[in-house]
Length: 401
Ligand code: ATP
Ligand code: MG
Image 1: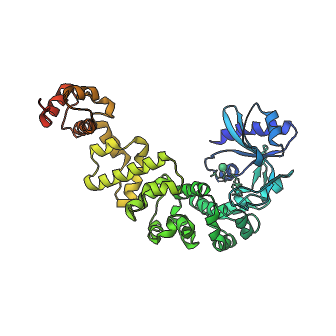
Image 2 (image 1 turned 30 degrees about the horizontal axis):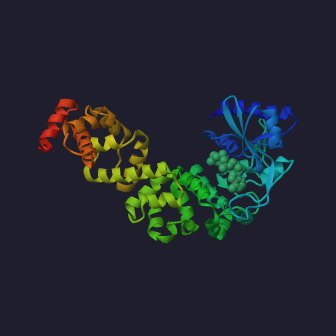
Image 3 (image 1 turned 60 degrees about the vertical axis):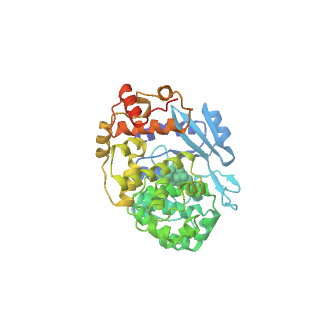
């Protein structure tokens, strides 16, 4: 998203205003705009209720009506539109107890976590900044809105959010905010793991990850996170991390490789509720990094490395082994590969069965196909049906009967 998208989003705000309500840009979009950084998603706060928003726009997706949030689709873009609200706190540490819709942007801004996230912007370009968020932005400071200790009690996720913003923005923590984070850190344990995972993912992929980990360490954060709390070596290993990771499963893969192989990627992913797709990525990555350590950057390795995991692989090798591999190196090897995938092999399963008519189908089929695949990739075998047949019959003569 860029500044033109902001221009387009103004129309959404103006449409709400023409219907007689207030509407402002809020949250991360305003912060990132002020920081001249790319904008993720545009959040809009409004005095209109979700029902009223539904009458103003044709396409409204009710994602969290009870919390006052809907997604407005406008000219093929999505905007999260939330009714001004105040929160009574999160006594279950998962969901706000009760949201109360309010009529002023000021009250809405005061429920927000940090001063830099509590700035509203009008469609005319005026900032509403009751907590001096712009000043904190200029000073690169993360400061809780209101009394930090109280805000962290209401929702301890804010502690983790503060640390992930350190990582993403390379900011410092305001003194009192930091003091109160340390005092309330044990509340982290009460959070639902899904919320924690989202923040950890962002924390480990931020540019200032080293600083963020240091704050995490100093606040004892890791003593309250699953798996980390049972093995101090894991936390100690985090302290040597200097560069960001692509995604959370890469961090788990790194810890698996470098600290403790008894905690499997599956355990990490299940505990932190990562999707199966992530688990598969992690398992493949550790296999490939082990293979790299054994054999180097071979064609077989590059063949097995999906394009989507190239960056993760490079980073993991750098973190784990201190080797720097360039993407170019990998792509060059990839270009030389005789085939890109199994479907390109000139001999298929049916041909194999025909070649060994007296053999019942079984595991051998898979094994032979794998041998052929590897033979082709390693240039020991030409990808030609007859040549493959010859090769097979010479290594594995068919049984006679
Ligand atoms: P990102 O760029 O990662 O989306 P963000 O600041 O927009 O960062 P969101 O989670 O999208 O983060 O939240 C949008 C806004 O909602 C925040 O800027 C903040 O004002 C408010 N907010 C989000 N989570 C909390 C929370 N736990 N407590 C208080 N306010 C919050
Ligand atoms: Mg956001």
